[in-house]
Length: 222
Image (cartoon, rainbow, N blue to C red; front, top):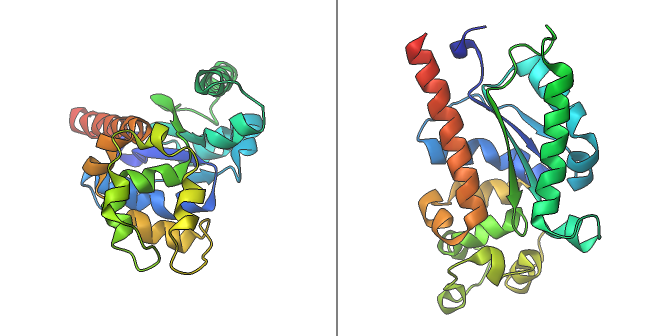
C-alpha cells in the first residue's frame, strides 16, 4: 500500500465532541482541507485505558493511517484515583501501544503498521483547549465572558475545572458535551493562539503537523 493510499492520520479519542470537531481542527492546524482523518471513539477515558488495543485493531486493520494519535483527558482518571500523575497515565497508554505493536507486527491484517503512534494527554480536558483560545469562545452567543477573566498564560494549570468554568459563564444552560457545540467552538478556534496558552494543545498541534508532513514527504518520495 503506497503512502498516497493511506490516510495521513488516524485518531483515537474519548468522546463525541472530539469525534465531531477534530477533522476541522486537523484542517486548521495543517492548512489542508478535506484530509481523510478516520477517528475511533473510545466513549470515555475507560475505553482508552482498558480497550486501547481493540481500537487500534479496528483503526489500523481497516484504514492503515500513516500516523496515529491517541487522545485522553487527564482530569477524570486522576480524580477517579486510577493514576497519580499525568506521567503515570501516559506511561500506561504508551505501554499498551508497545504491546500492541509487538503482537501485531508481521500480520498481514495490520500491515502496513502506522509509522508513528503518539499519545496526547488533554490537560485538564478537551474543554481546556477551548479556553486556550478564549477570544473565540467569547464570540459565541452561548457564553458571556469578560475579557479580563481570560489572561491565562497556561490554561492547563490555571483552570483546573474547565467544565465548571464554562457552566458558570453560560447565557442559558446547555450541554457542554454536545457534539454540535464542540463543532461550533472548534470551527472558530485559532490554533496558533491556543497553542501559546496550552502546552497540551501545543503537543497535539506538533504531533498532527509532524504526522501530516511526514505523510506528504513520503508521497513526494514515492
